[in-house]
Length: 379
Image (cartoon, rainbow, N blue to C red):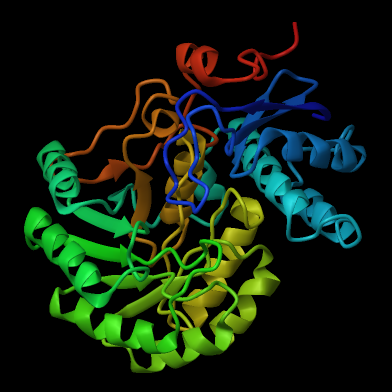
């Protein structure tokens, strides 16, 4: 089996708000699917949290290291891509594109061996996992209504984030958390300050005060409480916080995570598999975290393919018992044939079919994809 070509497909038309300082519009492309084709007709699908033009440019640069290669040698190939990126964008768009390629290669490896990817990553510690409904903060009325609807639909864990949190005053912060807690009852509730927004104003003193407030509302973890590069700040915050501290969603490659893990800056580390280097890197970050008593819960504001990858990762890491579920996104809810169904306890089954265990929905791809036929095997 050899790799013959690599195609891309951006998603537009239903892009959800991201909480960013320059807010996303429905036709903005920030998620790109990647298809890796092989000479025997097997196609692997991956997903990158990056605009299509950047992914396509990265693939133009990286493809000479892939075309004609054996796709089953997943980690050799993706590590080769990382190694060749030193001069051309290591850690940026080349790493984001490599993430999608890596996911697609694991998908191929699973299909070729008739095994779910999680088993290839080390084994299935679990057959199902709890998703937490991830929503943007809002005024108390609409946010409460949204959360109550999600409770009624079966979700048993929630995260609220971004909006004005940490950007106005302490009263706004507490009122927002109080409204969310009232809406979800005693179910798991996490809070995300969105410290990766440009020029986020929260400092260590604010984060410490806020962590004490969050403890009063039994918040499960405090995410992105500081700007992503503030290693010293995260280390100081985590040492004194009465709630768990999490972060890492914009970091890329295992080497960037290592200082945060070594200094125990996080209780929970949150690599994004569609940005940080793919399943290969997320697995290695998870192993390093586990050795230090740190839990991995993946960042997953992405697509149905990204969610499928996170589910397989969760099956293969012993302490990863939650995955992020971006609610209200057609790219998550509609992109996978058959969709996603919560069981009576609010869990998602981890697909057991070969590869990622999912198939793209042709109608959704035709509706939202820039190239709906990109995953069709060559005749």
